[in-house]
Image: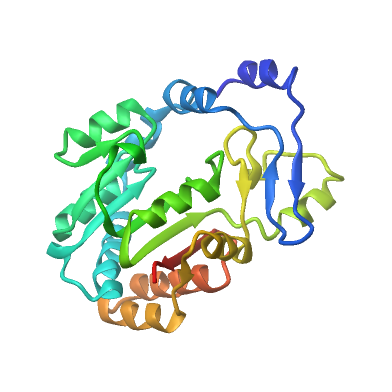
Length: 268
């Protein structure tokens, strides 16, 4: 995104970040409407860069994706052939391609037309909106999207309604626990190191507590960490990389880490 675009927008719109005194949720006061959001993702992002990263990623990267997809079956206690998965904000579809290789039935939603066409060319059901899908799912994952949508409560409620009973929604976002401290140090001024509130993009900023609260508002319950421990123990091979994955997955679900939050929410 060019500096000229930023300058044009912020000559007319004041950048403000607010925090709820009651729950601690942080959000941008002025956010793009749906038309501008679509333009951001379809025209302004250098989308070829992310595709190049996917195509040139190391085996370790794809091993991590395999670990994530292996965990799904053990968490649900279902064979992959019986599981429908949805990726909300699928990008170029790398997680869905990995899920497909495990035998899951994959679906995806993405705002970028180019990414939808790319994923559809791989034989995966891909859509531009949740409203286009008439299916229920056993597992839904969303990486780095819920903190970018205009109304996270509305989206998570929709995703919750699309879950089968006992289904799980996995939300992964940046961790905003340290953002107030960053603003205090900068005397209230935003700087590029505050990626949790990137103007126009990261419109919502969560902590582990506010993300769990979001799930509760939408009728979803945080999965018991012991269940995740058992699933990780069953799904992972031995080795230092897998041990690091297991520890990271558990910590991100329970308390969040500097690198982010990954919360598993269940529909009772």
